[in-house]
Image (tube, rainbow, N blue to C red; front, side, top):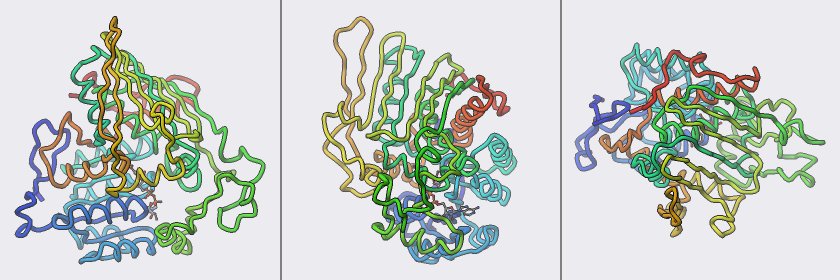
Length: 459
Ligand SMILES: NC(=O)c1ccc[n+]([C@@H]2O[C@H](COP(=O)([O-])OP(=O)(O)OC[C@H]3O[C@@H](n4cnc5c(N)ncnc54)[C@H](O)[C@@H]3O)[C@@H](O)[C@H]2O)c1
């Protein structure tokens, strides 16, 4: 697989034969490490369904052999299950290695793949601490190969439109941002059931979850962070309850626990996790009240950017509804937007199923509704509402668009939407700085964590 530079691209995108030529062209060959929900779903089943004539899996590896076998059977074709990662690379010689393991293990596979001379696509967060971050940046540089960081949120129609509005300078120079993200008691709680709830595995939600939000901020503002001050605590989940169990299945507290969740109602989750517990003890329906939980469930931060913008950010994990709200204050006016806030949309949303719908790539997830971006000029009585089509599935439609841009439409890179390691680093470094700021009770400079010098204007 050769690489050609896409005009203005932040990463070098693969040179591929267009759709019509694929009969004669070899398919793009993938090898995957980490065949859990995201790996075997979005990067497996969905990718093969969307681009079956262009893409094939040659090999899969997971530390849990039951899950890699599940993926091998799902992907079909010539896909082989491997019990060793290096052997998989040596035998399959893939065009890309797809890394979809637990967050704290991404670095190991990214670096090993680069060192063997392979291009990598990694799920977010790129990694979970500043040391691993540097190792990835160094390995990429040394190898001459490329890492694409899969920031799917950028690619949703709504988020892309917001980028367009900001890039058009509609509100003048932006000086501050208010950005608040609300995870509901279903989706939010899910992070406290399993590995995400352990700081050493996910880097906390400052990194695991907020990497999406910090990446959006960095991209929307076209600048990079210089300093972070933050607060956070664990107020709701974990030790904050009078009772607890190990997992929901068979739990004596089922009648009294609002967070009881029956994994057996979802056959895919049973096949992926329950049937493979004997290999590694991974409990997908772990108790949200476990004493070992050591991440924050309430977080807020102030981020100062190289271009002078101050951003106020917060993340909560036990909201009655799931959604977000953002406002960009500029010298000439204000740009404001939100998603799925029931009282603003004047409708009730199914909170229990909202996350499942968002993760779905099903066409039924498309709706006739729209989302709004509000623009108001200073000294004006009027405001303008810009509508974008609402696509409930696949992270606002971003999932599939990103796949297409990575594998098929190599020149479709509006506003440098394709993300590489610099973007991956700058988003996690905000979260890592936030963690450090809480621990050390002081503002933390990004320069304490990296030798990348924050750019005033990214492009
Ligand atoms: N972009 C998005 O919107 C999005 C959505 C969901 C998940 N993700 C990311 O995808 C990745 C996977 O998440 P998931 O929800 O599928 O989790 P998961 O727990 O379902 O899957 C993780 C897999 O990694 C395997 N694994 C763990 N340690 C390993 C190791 N050392 N070596 C090899 N395999 C190992 C596990 O056995 C499991 O199969 C995470 O990085 C997560 O942040 C991204």
